[in-house]
Image (cartoon, rainbow, N blue to C red; front, side, top):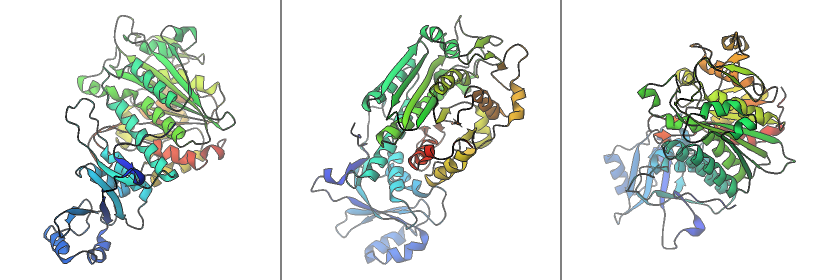
Length: 473
C-alpha cells in the first residue's frame, strides 16, 4: 500500500512551481560568527538587535531587503541532549507555509531532524473547531529515506491519536477497528476472539478483566509478511479505560486512564513501521483489549483466575489488570514459536517513579539484544533503560493457594510486574517495555499528551538485522 504523506511534509515534485520554500538554517554558537558573515549588513544588525548568537532555543526570522522572510535561523547551542529534536520545537511554532532545510550542523542527521519536524508539528485537533494549517517541510522525492521519515511520523501520529482519543470514543470496539484498518491497509490477515468466545477458546484472564464492561473484551491479532522471514510477535496491552476495578483508583489516578491502552497503540505503531518500511519480518501482532470496569460481575480481590498457560493466579489487586490480559496474549504468541517477542504496556507507576515519564524501562530475558537496542535508542533520540529481571523477587509473587498472585506489593513494582509476565513467555526470547505513553509537558518534538516511546529504537534495531543476531544468549 502507498504511504500517506502527513500534512507537515510535501515531496519536492509536488511543490507548486511558483513557491520558493523558506530556508531553515540550524546554527550552533561556535558556527554563528562564520555564518553571520554570509548575511547582509542589515540582517546582521537585525540579529544583533535581537541578541541572536545561536544559543539553544533561539529563533530568528530573517527578512530580505524587500521585507519578506526567506530564511529562519534556529540556535542549538553546543551540547544539548535534545539534539535534532530541537527542530521539532520549530515546526510547531512557525506560521503555515513551505520550508526546506538549508544549513545543518555537521553532526546533525538530516533524516532525524526531518522526523523531529514531523513529531513537533503533531496536533490532536479532532475535537477542536479551529484547525490550523501546519508548517510544511519539503522533502526530496520518494526515496527510501523519505519513505522512512513519513512512515515514522505516521506511526507516531497513529500512536498519539489512539492514546489521546477519550475512552468514550476509543473503547474495545473502536480499538479493534483501528487494528483492522491498519491490517487492511497493508493487506495483513486479521482475526479476533470476542466476549464469551474468550472462554470457549481459553483466554480466561482477558475475559475476567473485561467482563464487567459494556463492550466485550477481545483478543485481536493479525499476521503479515513472508513466512520464511524470522517470526516476530508484538503484543500490546489494550485496557481502553482503567477504573482500577474493585480496587478503584482515586480521581487523580483515573484522570488520564484513557491512555491505559497505550501499549496496544505502541504495538500498532511498531507494526505500522515494520510494514510501511517492508522489513524482512514475519509479523504477528496481538492486542489484549478490555475495559477494566466495575459492575456486579467484576472480578474481585481474592478471586483465583485460571490462565491460558494453565497457571492459576490469585488476585491481590484488581488494579494490576494489565499483566493479566498480557499473560494470556503472551501465551498465545509463544504457541507459534516466534524468534522474538516484544510487548508494550502502560503497566506500573513504579516505572515512572524509578525513571520518570520519558525513559521507559526495558526488561529482557536475553542479554544479547539489550546493548543493541539501547545503542539504537540513543542514536534515534528514543532512549530506553535496561532493568533487571531479578529472580529472587519472584518470592513476592508467591501465593499459598495459587500458582502465583498478580501483585508483588509495594517494593520493586516494575520488576515484579515484569517477572509476572516472564512466567507466561516460557523460554522464548522476549523483551518488555513498561511505557508511560504520555508526555506531561511539551518539549522539543513531543507535544503534551499521548506519546510514543521505544518504538523508533526497536525499529532501528530490527532494520539493522536484530532478529538475525544472537538471540539465544
